[in-house]
Image 1 (cartoon, helix red, strand yellow):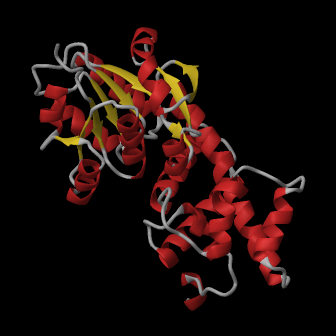
Image 2 (cartoon, one colour; image 1 turned 135 degrees about the vertical axis):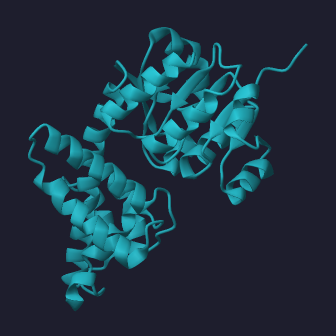
Length: 297
């Protein structure tokens, strides 16, 4: 009896490594590919296999999860995958957050290459993806979604089917708008409490019991209080998604004033803490104890 084909994982960053670990824990073989040698080594250390290219990975895997940074990277991957002669019946699961028109274009290109694409951006941090509490937003051909349903039971047990290709990206961006502004509000509230002389940890514990409670207090509050910016999500990725939101708002003449402000705070925090810091580092843009780039002008 032959062994089942492994699941391919292209992109072994925070999200790709979390999803790979869930599959490996469940006894599913994973073959990964990433241009970063350190990420490849980390996958191998937990029992994953490696391919030397996306093309080699496609020759081994009938289901491929894409967890890369941007739509541009997906299109570069498709250009490579199109050279394969073994794409028939292959399903791509795309977890990358894209602009809606980008993922529609990518899906059409994939279809032309004989691939089925399931859109599946994930709402939640890599830590939440790892423990199974993140939510996948699913869109695409019903038959392709049905074919990978058992895999999604492992990858992301919490999921919602939101409709046609593009609708998952639209939903993700709208959710991110709320989430990111909640995070900025929490950062400002903690910094304000500190400025009033309150113990920030005590304040956070109180806020969690108050009418102001939101889930971001659980995922990012302690990190803000402790200045622990070890990444569960990168600030550069958060800013990328914010810029996608702003671009969509501009195209449709929608007014998003809080998101405009939040984008400014993110850029300031990135200048202070670096692009790979956790998104909770946005608090450093409002803490009075830190000088900001504009202060020196």
